[in-house]
Image (cartoon, rainbow, N blue to C red; front, top):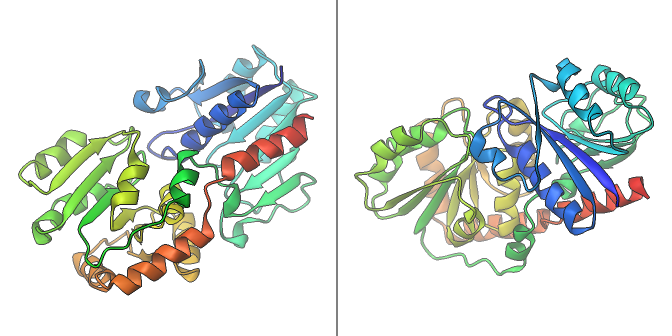
Length: 336
């Protein structure tokens, strides 16, 4: 049996996207007959770890510290390793390969601009700015089509997206952690202003202020609050508009064809949002301000059905949801 070890992380700093991608990879590799080992940082929230489909080992500290993770990996030496982290450094790869020689390493990386001594680099960023790896001899796969998303997304992508004449339902989903707290900021005024619309607030497994946001929203009959749900794609498909951050959920929303207001946080999310908008999908809100008038102006524009239809069509042209299958093909090429 072919064997692959997956190493990832999730916490308030790095959010949950890397872990979710690795969970999908694990499911995909298992279905293809691989034995999967899984390594996750101890600090990751328990509800997130519950979704890992195989028994997992926890490591202490950051991957860059190397020592504890490498000792854990040495307990079950494997020929193939997939690293999907916020940022992996070449110094760590050197330590890892010295301690576990003769293995093949695939690095899923979003940052670029440094050397990575590994077998394969997969960079799923839409912006070519991040595709630079000087002096790296690895096989390289670049672009948004390599972003690993849950397989149900490809099914929703194939469905026709209905664009209603009026906005009736909005989904607010800021990822597994929402490190900037935008869900709570929006909860404090948005349902009050738009009382004729229905709102679904979707909180991820790592969200830290669930009880507070429920308390704020409990007085509204037009609001549902969900926490760590398995049916987010259905809600996005049924919605007329999505509020989301600039990471994986943005790709998912585009694939489904639901127009988005984008609240990018970190710098790479800002560039990500700009690239999506440049290709016709979404409108950007300056998340560091998240001021009401900017959101209200964008919503006024989105009330035009023709605007939403153009955005919907652009998103479906960009993202097809087949990244997991492409990752499996890359793994097959590496492992033989």
